[in-house]
Image (cartoon, rainbow, N blue to C red; front, side, top):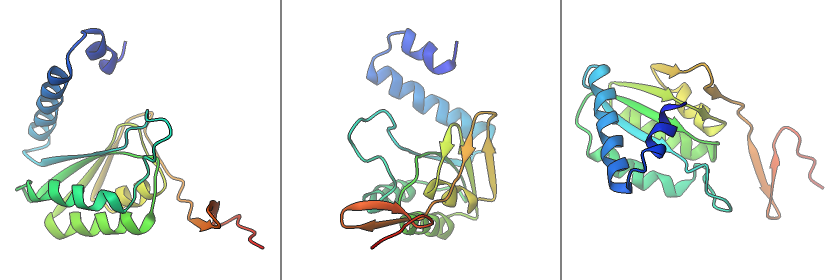
Length: 153
């Protein structure tokens, strides 16, 4: 049984899960030499809601960074991708604040998430973690097309 399932099987309240999450993030920080830890994760289970990286992510990331004090940070990232320009802005925010930026990819960081992760000094991944592909997208007449395969009239 997986670790996540064990927490769910305990029937923990939201408050208990939040406390446990904070405890585990502190443990990661300790194991990694006192680095700050930032979680940047999409809620992949939300149906019908955009979970892609977009401009609405910049302010919350900036706010969270303002609370961090160390010179090194580990960013736990989980995302299906999104806007490459926003990925670049997030990288600029991280690189402007920290001397060393490392990424932990427990699941996957696709497309724009890969761009963010590739900016790191290190990328830590497990056996089932994944990056890529980076697929530039075009928006035309309300539809999204892959830039590589786009045949617009």
